[in-house]
Image (cartoon, rainbow, N blue to C red):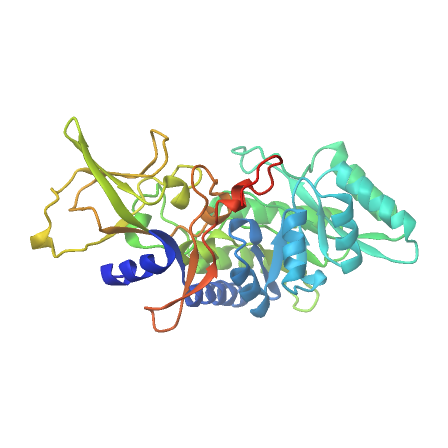
Length: 414
């Protein structure tokens, strides 16, 4: 629980806005999801989705916990390598893979999921140049989920390109198809059931023996407070719900331990969303035609880069006791520092709020760090909570203005 004096002390050192990362909670989330699936189906591997939040401290912890790295770009692949992740524990996805990165991934033994004929052409060219080595590959599958979603990723399993990829990999002198992959953003159990069944059907149609692995991607709900659950249109599934459903389907398809494919899942939001909070100071107040507007040292882009926060729950850290608060009670609109008209972190907040207070938004670890644009101000620092709960370790500096301008030619910034 962050208090006003703690926020004020932290702001004095790091600035009027900052992120707080709870590593213990992340570890707890990882172990809880891992345990839920282990109880239903073995072997299962967790591959953390770097794109969701590639803060290096998080990615290093995943590696320490025995998780895989799921990356979707050359940049993320390089990051995993610099963090000491064994190439064999990197899953390389994404629609754009450079030839040099594919070469590195092939020679490191990484799991490469072919997303297009372009991916395949590069892989086959590299394989043809190194006939003394064998390369194992996987394919990202594209199919509809009950007719509700047309994804742009992967190869249409009913199309000729999918058949071409399967055929060329199978006929290659030193290439071998060892797995299948899919991923969709849907989080409901029905979509996961469809996803799992279709992947199992494809595996039976393509492989004469169980493949090395079947990767059904991510998109899982994670732990969240009741106030946030109430804003959803459905009751979110739990880790146990997902594991029981998916593990049960895989267990029925492959009942014999020891001759089963490894089930791979790629959680991101489920592990990291509730491990980050954003704290910002209230720096200004005004009334516009009867509407009270409070400006904070943060932006909607700090908590919801796609500006789809849906009024995330907010906690106010008050400088004064309620009986001493001079600011009127709501409705108050909590506005960001940008010059964008719709930059509101919260509309119609109903409590007391005054200049000098702080606002805190929880459950913002998913995509906030990686997608926040440098518009007007670079991003805030990240502080990792230490075990006593009141002190922090800086794990990312506040981005300086140099970060934005140093690569422009013709400008002498420093």
